[in-house]
Length: 414
Image (cartoon, rainbow, N blue to C red; front, side, top):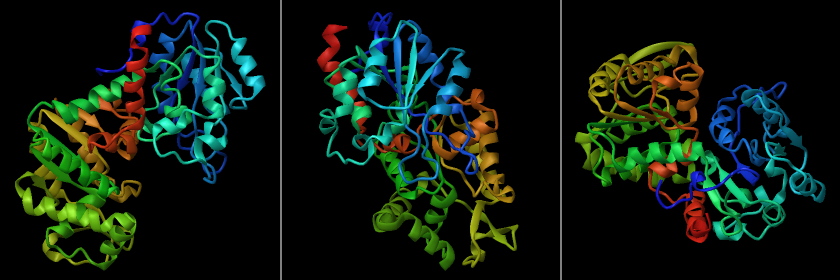
């Protein structure tokens, strides 16, 4: 990515590096143990580059008040196993004793600080812009004992907080290996994709999906957009089909205050760009805990729509196989229910069968790719969820803005 600093430009040996990551991971609700370490594994390439540095890891897990809010001790222990290096966990953020421990580090040492969100500055305080995050205790104290700031926290790149954007003018702020990979691959999906280019947009975040669709259309780079999942049900509704009060109420309540704006976007898409859209032609509903196929002309239904139908998948198959670039974000179904995983898994199978450049846009879709062991069969499996959608929809990304600004300040000093 142009306009940012590069780790290649620095002699990293002996440097004290603040390394901000996003390893927010699913935890077992019973014993709070890690259920998935895929985000931790993505840190290995950057940590290899920093093998002769003094590395201080900054991270978070969930947020205060949530059941999965925890300290970072098991993240630290698991990362130590993954990279086969000792990591010292510090149950603190920036006390004087922690600052002393950082000063005493030797080359190759790694400290993993506790959950950044236990500090009120990191989560409880709201910031109007990234510049307001610089004057904080966390930034002031940690920057006093560091030489560089490196970030691989792409999954939080749409947010602003002291440990995400506060070091902009204090230290050279540099994207790590993961951040560069994310930006490079996702930029391909919005700047210069191979054609024909297909976007498959699903899941429950209909408002985000429609903003992505409109951004791709306005850039004149997309050939077809397939809608599946909850957003697919919304588009069926916007296209004139009565999907039933239960399904309409579910979508309305899910989108909440953004529903009116989202409905306007849906109407705009079906009326102005019908030739670009691929909508479900059949669906599957749940009746007495069973999967029941249904044609659109059988609507409305009092039962929940949980998947796309077989004909919809057959219609999508040749388009997927003939595409040169595929962006897929969001499941096609309520895939946590075994009887309704079919549509999502079939789309995944088609995506890994094709020779197209395949970009998986984070969140549940990314987790599915990881859990089924096919990460090596897609071009890029994003670690982002909301950040991926923000980038694809053309919204401002505070962490990216911070990296670019820092480069203008420190580029002559590298």
